[in-house]
Length: 220
Image (cartoon, rainbow, N blue to C red; front, top):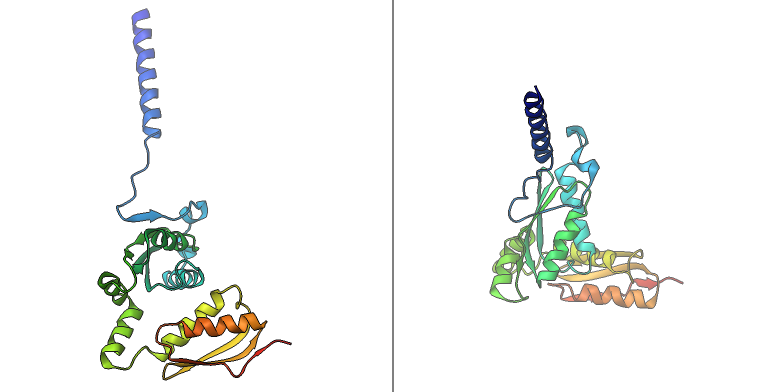
């Protein structure tokens, strides 16, 4: 009888230890090339109806990249599918590439970031190829080949984004209009320094031939 009890007890302990070991198995590893977004319990428990639209995520990530000093000057294409954001284009350094991935991962609704940015110096053939692979890069490449220079609408969009992202200019009422690659700034700047910075940012934008700021006034 004692032998039977001992056998049953040993079997119970063995089963208990086996169940505990299974419960402590780690989760599956993340796929290669993908980075998990910051932990968010709400993201893992979302229902289908609560899932943020991919287009909204894409717009949010693009806005964040344009607003950040580390990435606003890069050609970065953002594509989102079921919460997974893919970044393509070029970056000046590994630090800048990692910063772009981090910025994208912090946007609401992002589950994974597939960071495919190519690290290469500005002006190199590798960087040019990476930039041209983006949507905006394709447009500029086609315009350059046609001899039309950089598109006015792209210049306007880029200048506006830089003005909004710059801490010295952000919040000022500045209007941007581009015709034949000449940027016209109108409206009101908070200070003379803000006005000067707005002109400098516009003049430094790729494709801009001249900046007219006669009607950009300083707030009294």
